[in-house]
Image 1 (cartoon, helix red, strand yellow):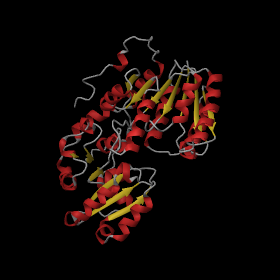
Image 2 (cartoon, rainbow, N blue to C red; image 1 turned 180 degrees about the horizontal axis):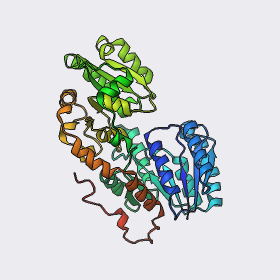
Image 3 (cartoon, one colour; image 1 turned 45 degrees about the vertical axis):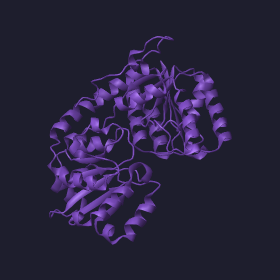
Length: 397
């Protein structure tokens, strides 16, 4: 079987990290004879990873893209030109399937159009699903109508949980929909590092100071760092003898730094550390982690924190209540509930949740399912596809 992977993202974030693990799973499949990976040269970290993978595995071939999604965004002519050139390559390759890494339905469009132009069966790897216009404005309604059309383009979808799958089945009723849950490095669940040792390693005081960590891409619209800062300012007394560590980088890094610098309250307790290649010591050193996102797929940091048996307080969005108890969830716009949950979180027992996460998010489970979703034969036309049927027990606690 010949399959392909297409990713034109210029970002090397959580979805790209899972894509790398997807690649590794497919390399190990005996049913896949050739794996052709389309990746932008300008995404240096991801491109280097794929080149190294091709060097180590003869079945892998790297196809360098001369653009990123970000470089052609808003340029319809460039989009069409890149789609046509990619389609020509796909015609020559004659792939059985092309996996297209789409963070949202409007990312990776050049690959989706290329698959359609070349007649290649497309599988969208999609962790985020819209289900309505952003607002009641006319322009947002028009954009939503266009998005609804794009949702019907892929032949198959691979998403992260039943909540997202249910949305896709409404938006793309004729597409096969399958679930592939994330997995994380098992060392998060097997580390012997203690909280005191982690703090000593990082040069953090171990004198009763409470540590709260926000780990993720600095993107206010998505991860809502500004909501965290607003919550601290509104409840300054609660954050005395507390250090809030923010780890990550992104488009709002400068804005974040300016907000902290301009506020005496924030300057007192917030520390911006930038990107860290290894977040395990910071998770272990923390009393509580926070993730006040506006939307999510299945965030890796949530799995990592629970595996390390550290509580994480998250917004009740995107079906995340299927993973965590009510004591670690808050209504996304409620500053008071957010702060209340943060300071009560260390009393929440997470050991039993961690045990379930170790089983559910293991590499063995991920690899088997990743290979299955790519090697499952296409269903005959106009027949029922069991892979798209709802799984009522998939998210039982």
